[in-house]
Image (cartoon, rainbow, N blue to C red):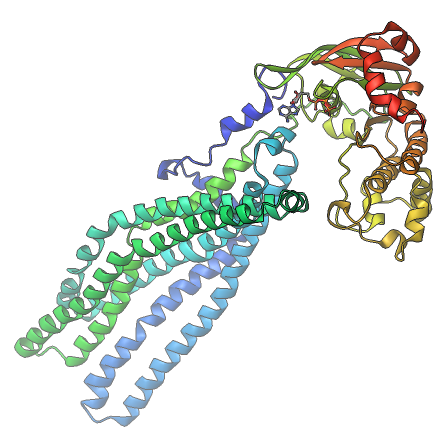
Length: 605
Ligand code: ATP
């Protein structure tokens, strides 16, 4: 899947189209129902509750009729008491069942939400890096939080409303036709006038809702970008607060306009329903009145009928545009499915090999790679790193050094050529077993907002305290940790920003030491550290590289001096290779890079 000539960002964009409008035919009902399946017991109970409540709701108008036609007419106080008691009793039982149903609804809705969130997050963990570089973080966050939250509205809102209203209409129809079929037919006359003119309302609502959701995505991204630590630092240093506030205000105003439009879309609908709620009963009073005068229809029947009308028109109007409502509600599932359908990182290969503990023999064979079609980042790169060797890569900025490092753990796959570890093409290896053997220390050290101990144990949760101390000592960070009031339990702050750059990097080195991989990828920091920091890091690197095959993007003289072989990269190609002294004598690109880059650190080294 990832091999061949199609880059990954194109692979997932083919299956992912958040803008496609949902179509009833395209809603994958079976797939949606699969998420409902684990909760069938609760759903059956909810259904029973709905039917029982709907049936109980038919009783009060009936009791009203009996009060008028029997108790009052025949001055029967005992019957009056019974009827009023029945009226109150049915309402109370209905309310109790409603409360229980509320609990069941919440259980099903929240359960489905949890399952969807789990599925999404697990899937996102398996998405290739290219997806994350091409997608705004805010959009991903929104998909996992707001879209999944919307599922709850679909389950406990839309679907329950539809079923409840259908149950109420159905039981009311039975009740009114038993009571008097002529008046029943008369009351149904009004319903088409409610439904016909209002069909377009649902469609417009769907369109506006979709724009609202997209605008929310945008706002979430803005918040993500501007209120993250790096974002806010950028804003402050460029004094862009005013412009950013304006940008946020403009986006917020667009959302506000959309929400106001959404509120207005239904205004005609509400007006017409409001009018019919008065017209309908008037018609029934007229028809009932005529029947009462001519053929002695009881007054209680007319009163009961008018009461039933509320139970007919209310639910009928709620069901207007039910199809559009249902489809736009279910579009939330579609948005989530679009994410779940994006091609994940690892092809499902039955024959995938488990690397076990690698020896660390690395071979690049004529590797060619482009991030974007037509722009080659690496071209025919071939080299070998034997077990235990230190291999350094140097070259001008943008030459492709980091890209070489990213290909080994398969953050990206080359379009041509092969990468072998211990003689196996990395694409034939189980991704997990490949990455377990590789430790990475990059320029941008990422630490979680947790304690130093938790950060260190990230690669090996079962590491003992003594191992933690040993790794910290080897990485030259122990003294600092010991000097902190909370020691290993100190939290490092958002992304580790409570520590200095050099300290963060030494913690990252300790973290990899604990993981103890056979292969090390190290992207040395370009930023110049003061000489103490520099020495501390340089000394920490010695145990880090010991006994491992190390691929290092070198910015330190100490590293290139120790390297078994240096590859000089320029514009995606290896242009020179050899040991430091030979390359320096050769007088090519390396020699000029040496003068520009490494001589500065000469003093420290
Ligand atoms: P530096 O020393 O400045 O870190 P480098 O040698 O490590 O540079 P790379 O990061 O490997 O260079 O980049 C090689 C080329 O690929 C550059 O031209 C860069 O613009 C491009 N590139 C890097 N990452 C991406 C990406 N995610 N998408 C598209 N192009 C990229």
